[in-house]
Length: 139
Image (tube, rainbow, N blue to C red):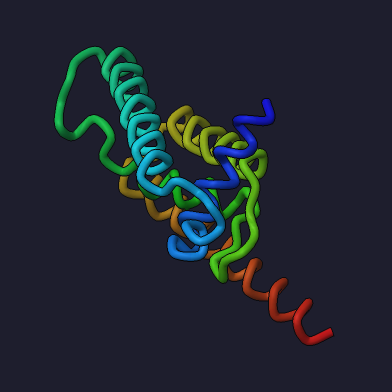
């Protein structure tokens, strides 16, 4: 457990300022290699999962998921202005997006309108985030 937390802190430090992390004693090459191997493995698992969900492999199977991923992070509390966000919040945001997608599909909403509605939800979330940040900075 402690090793996992340390690896996460190292990844966060490398992403924030690589040179400062190196001066702090973080082995940049080893940690970057580990991060890329982990991401490659997770991408492979998600690709196999998506192919089994769709039923076959196709280049357009994941098309449109980038909007869902960004909206899930924003709805989960990640600030567009930076510096704020948790993994738990992103998971809650993804549950909200999956529920929205599932509800729209169950009501036979056309695909184009689904993208518009998801975009509206994303714009509202970004607007609310900016309003909250401005309100807290003025106090």
